[in-house]
Length: 363
Image (cartoon, rainbow, N blue to C red):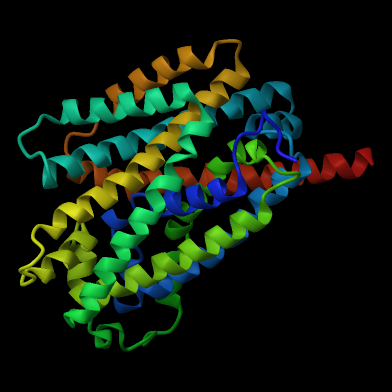
């Protein structure tokens, strides 16, 4: 039976997981260090991410009615749990900021070259604030509308690549010519942190599911489907651009689409790709922003609406700290991934051990 205070359906959770995981991935060529085997590196990262996802689901199943904040306070105690919860709020806000800068730079590079960056990023921050003000029910309705259209666009591009013979599978060979070690190095730990480890954000929304317990089946099916999709798209980029060009492209999907320049009956397909990337980025901005606000509202007596303004202003201001897009990418694929390990792996593992021991001795 549906519960009125739990507004999210299983299908909405599945759609959100798919769109969230796709997110900003088209901006990068994942596993580039593995060259033509980058798609295998993505597969390894997805498999490792699945183990991490099972850990997150374990935590949620131990306390199915509690959000991340409640789980932290149960496992670490009230004071330590509140401190770590505050750090998670800052972490989610930071991730939202990174996507705001991504979408601002993407707009400047593809659509609105003369529009100041501060205007485009302000617009997206205001959208995030408005959606969060309206609540989770509104945010989780968006993928129901956007995902079918997004998948249609991807299927159209895939069809065109093969119909115009732009994909050459010979670029994928030789497979694992130097063994599995280079593939593992390209995948771990970076591809766990981004994008698969970011599933930790769902510890704030799984309790909103309108069913009983934890939506394990919806989560796992969605994760499996989007993982296969990301592996396929990574391999497709290699077959179109070749491993070297794909690895050195800032926007590999966009570069791949530009190889369809001879397509006379449809012009500016790069605009379509830009809009597809905007959609994924906007979903990530919304979910990270919503969870950052909810954590602080749960930990304090301050209204959600006040935290929307506080985090909105801080995210917008901090999005200008990086001097340019090159520095932004360097930080995102460098130091940020090291910080991710703490929040996505170390703390959840310690938390799981703490909860298991506590429930064992209290039984």
